[in-house]
Image (cartoon, rainbow, N blue to C red; front, side):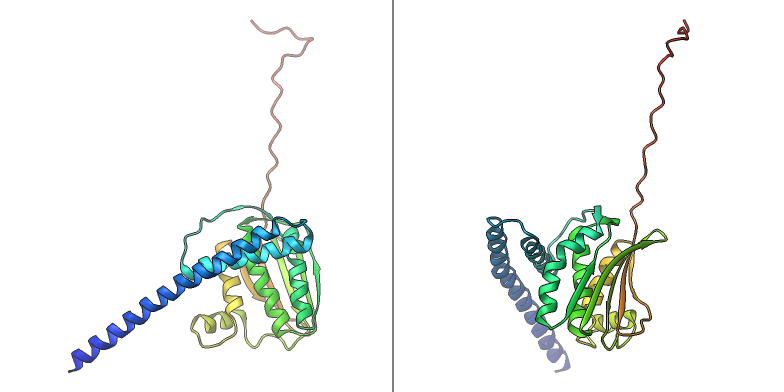
Length: 236
């Protein structure tokens, strides 16, 4: 009797798992189409800063859909200007902040890192969304460099984080909290790029930092001129 009950439980779990796979596949099919159409529609518009920001958010949504369905994605590592990344995303972040009654300031600074630009935009967007949704009225995003690191600092004047970043990430992974999922996503992306997401004390509110290794640009040494001087005969 116990064995039969166990078989029934296992069968029910397998059926539930198959149903979730089917639902995920249908969601992928139904969502990917509108995303593609929306991006095609943007192609006919003038490429303003707002249009570029919308296109970036649509690509982020497609990326999240790939993650949900387990679709393989090649890891593209290229030189990424973090300052330009922040500037491109600023119009969309400003619209989100305005919807929540927040004031957002973005202070980009040219700083190069090596990585996947779309993944890094995903990490930054999650940190900004956390500050906008759970922070205070003022949200500030700033890029800076120092000590071989590039830092994206997201600060707000709200109540602050309820726990440390590692604790919130662990709670989100263990499904013990509805908060921390954005931090978990950003932390995973940072680790894959050799960096981390951390928080530092702030007089008011939260101060969360995405820290990445700066791209070391090496200047090629000039080739030596091996031509024979005109006033010196060549050796035979």
